[in-house]
Amino acid sequence: MTPKDWQGKCSLVREHFLSEAAKAASAEALEAVKVACLGRKGELTELLKSLKDFSLEDKKTLGPLGNALKQELSALFDAREAALKASELEAGLMADASDVTLPPYPFQRGRLHPLTLATRRIAGILERLGFAWADGPHVETERYNFDALNIPQNHPARAMQDTFYLNGPCRDKRLLRTHTSSVQIRYMEGRKPPLRIISPGRVFRKDALDASHSPVFHQVEGLYVDKNVSMADLKSTLTSLMRGLFGPKARIRFRPSFFPFVEPGVEVDATCSFCSGGARCPVCKGTGWLEMGGAGMVHPNVLKAVDIDPEQWSGFAFGMGIERLAMLDYGVNDIRAFYENDVRVLRQF
Ligand code: PHE
Image (cartoon, rainbow, N blue to C red; front, top):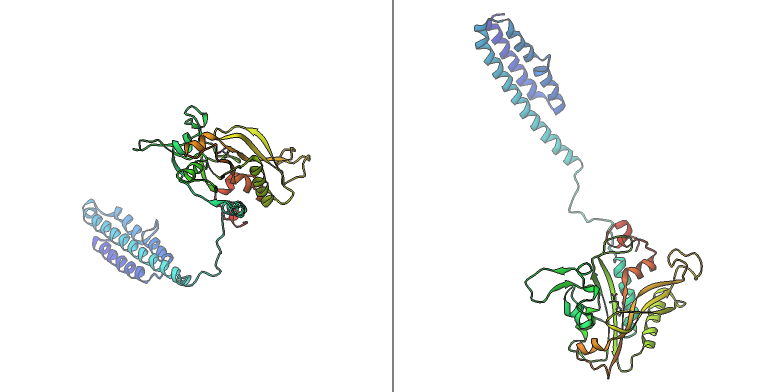
């Protein structure tokens, strides 16, 4: 083969593959054309291999010609491949295109979160007893969360490991309230008895998250201040609450306890709603009783802190964990189910 023949073959190869590439109607067909040209046994590959039979002199002129052709055709194949893929993608999208302006039937109805449902049930029962709903902020000062509640500076509840303190430019230390009892102070401040409120809401403590603890949970606070309010009023109110929640047979009991803002203070238990007592109940561990929260008669120092005369007025207060009530009521055994917002869980309420 003379150099001239070789160059002639090059232009034939070029023309042939230019037209083949243009004819290829799919990325797949193009791939076959590419292999026939540039593959290991491809026509151009064979042609380039045949250069070895030429003289050094001829190689110097023919070699660059061959390489330029190889580059030209590779670039052509790449461009053609990109164009084919783009139009295939577009055809695919057109084939299963959906009309995004159509209404999304069937509509999925939203529903209330189980903690909202539990809060509303508790509030509904207490509102019928004359308690009004009061709100307070999540970010508090030490005065509302501790000082005015007769919790002294050195009380363990104030320690850093229990309370989330906030950094900031304020002169008063800011913190995330550790209980809803702060609302007692906010509500009594600047008001005169009789007062009767409940205050449901979020509270924060440095607890690790596990099946029964969460650093963020909910409480409902109750406060009643009037003339001659007694422990009997507290007991009847809480009995009505538990009967409203768990049925007419529910009973409560008080165990002596200590909270700085009440005197006397009690821990409130309700009869286990899962067993009739005595049995090997896993919920109450066979005791027949479940802890519901704390309560007591408002401490005279708390009344004094908000300018209410403890000689004239008395009151009771209680604080219950809403998650605890909701877990018992709905048979939920892991508190985390309330916060993960897994729709498979939420759909059940
Ligand atoms: N604030 C208390 C707590 O979080 C509960 C409580 C409220 C106790 C009111 C007595 C009176 O544990």
